[in-house]
Amino acid sequence: MRIVLLGAPGAGKGTVAKSLTEFDGSVQISTGDILRNAVKAGSELGKKAKGYMERGELVPDDLIMDIMEVRMKEPDCQKGFLLDGFPRTIPQAEALKKLLEKIGIKLDAAINLDVPTDVILDRLTTRRTCSNPDCQEIYNIKSKPPKPDGTCFKCGSPAVQRADETEEAIKQRLATYNEKTAPLIDFYKKEGLLKTISSLSSQEIVEEVKAAVKK
Ligand code: AP5
Image (tube, rainbow, N blue to C red):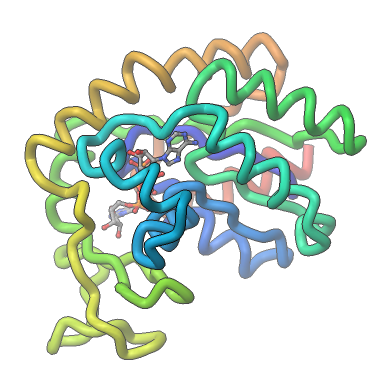
């Protein structure tokens, strides 16, 4: 499947994308994970992105498009892709549209995960993420806890809070989402690709996405 996952920070994009990869082999492409790995590795990209991310602001569009133009042409994307956290602005959505036209690929759907703000705030403060860059399994101390010693079930590395999970950064991320990313809902509605899902159950969401893509 070839889908864009939209939704506020903490809406569950990463969780749903990870489940969907197990369904048909489509790859999850998370710009957030790519950037966090770059920050951890101390690469040029990481050095440029770090400050924006810690403040809860968006990384500039040109940096993101440089990464995504390369990533989306890689062979594993042929099977399908789940875009998690990209596009994030209207210019990114327009650039993605042009890129897909150039490589002759059509999106199946843009899935908007519609989750109330109180649920989002609760999820973000209770999330834990595997610190191993090759794993990055997502946990939640309430709904999906890591092992009792705080490590990841998959790879044994510590599951930790992200650097952008401070109260201040969360507030900024939500404001940034409302200003820059929420307009994409209208963009994809006009493209005829929007499917909004309001369920709070990951399992139900996964089934709804599969059904939407089959149509
Ligand atoms: P990014 O990593 O994309 O963060 P985000 O959009 O803020 O999204 P999150 O990863 O916080 O949440 P999610 O929706 O994936 O939820 P999750 O599944 O983890 O971006 C981080 C930063 O990188 C940005 O702020 C920006 O600086 C930069 N960036 C990234 N992409 C960019 C771009 N394209 N352009 C510019 N800058 C960019 O779930 C959250 C929690 O809830 C977890 O604990 C999970 O276990 C739990 N949970 C999920 N679903 C359920 C459920 N159904 N029931 C109960 N608990 C659930």
